[in-house]
Length: 126
Image 1 (tube, one colour):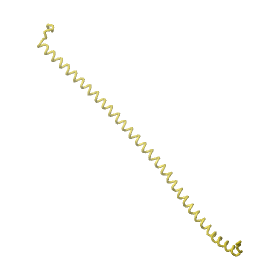
Image 2 (image 1 turned 60 degrees about the vertical axis):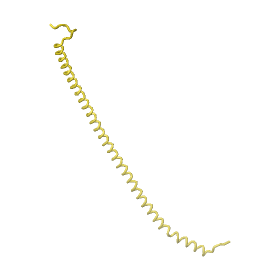
Image 3 (image 1 turned 90 degrees about the horizontal axis):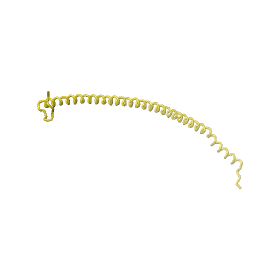
């Protein structure tokens, strides 16, 4: 068996203790890094929350603008269609009046022609 002497064991313990002396400083350094990372993660988290709120607000504003714009387009189209309907109706009325005038003019001409050229079947005028 290879048993170590007390001197060798003490030297081994001293070496291990030397290595362990650095441990608190390394733990502190690691703690600072974790703390720094925690702050950075919290900062990113707050930025994401702010971005989400901003995007929600902007999308709501865009939806409102689109809704208003679509409503304006609908109103304008309805007005245009109604105006077109009124113009078409007025055009039909004018055409009807003109057709009636032309028809009556035609009847008058036929009457004048009929007076000058009585048809053989027409009854004699008195």
